[in-house]
Image (cartoon, rainbow, N blue to C red; front, side):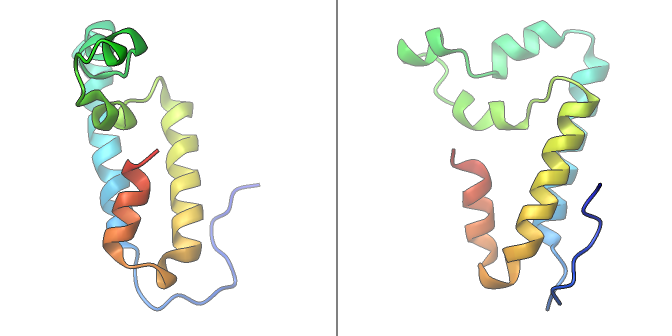
Length: 103
């Protein structure tokens, strides 16, 4: 069963959520079409050995945009859309962005 809609009325469109989903999809398409998936994971994925040595600290942010396959990105974006749309009217848009990027 897919959560396509709910019975809670919303006051606005989830433009921030749609933007985050679009960014993830564009990065996934780039990742899948690049042909160098392993190198992308090494460069942008969060690898514990690098993080504990203080190398590549930016991977805390870049790794959240990487997805392993089509089912992975579909499941994550479906969950993101379903969970954020239900509470977005109660949150401000900047909070939605920070919740997505903070683990």
